[in-house]
Every structure is written in C-alpha cells, then in structure tokens.
Image 1 (tube, rainbow, N blue to C red):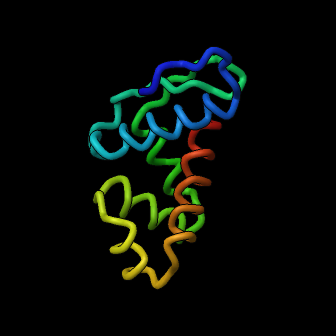
Image 2 (image 1 turned 135 degrees about the vertical axis):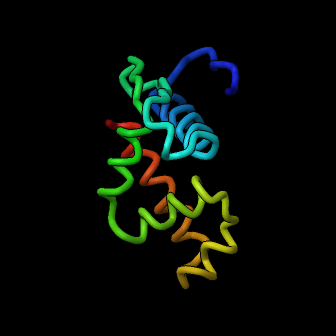
Length: 107
C-alpha cells in the first residue's frame, strides 16, 4: 500500500480500499470463508470483512459485473481475455470492476 499523503482524502481512502480488496480477492480463494481483510472507509473508519461476506456480495451483483469480478479477481484473467470472453470493451471491464470494488468497500 502507498504511503499516506499529507492530507488523507476520501478519494485516497477509496483507492486504498480498492487496492486491498483487489489483492485480497486475488489471493484468498472462495473456500477460505473465514479469512478477513480490513479496509479503510471513506469516512476514515476501518471495516473488517470476511471472504464469505465478499463472496455473497459478489454473488448479488449484476450478472456481467459478477462475471468480471470472478474472471479478473478469482481467475486472474487479463482485461483482454475478459473482453474477448464477454464481448465487451476494455472500458466496460474497467468501469464494472471499479464499480464492483466500490460496492464492496461500502459493505
């Protein structure tokens, strides 16, 4: 994780939360339900989430967003692979992934 700037903003905390969630989801399999990650919230507080909570939240996402999260985070597919598999643009993959990570950070 990056060093904190002189003035911590909600935007910086959001970027850090995305980074932590992306890393956690890519290394902790769905079967490790009790594993936890602590992420910063936009209001400056911290929130600890289990892999089970994150998996349930991903399962409730819109179908394409859910597919993108599973392919990108859990299967570690490249954006190009995801675009080809789903027939969408790179921008769509990036947008849906960012939106999904933001939704998870709000849990």
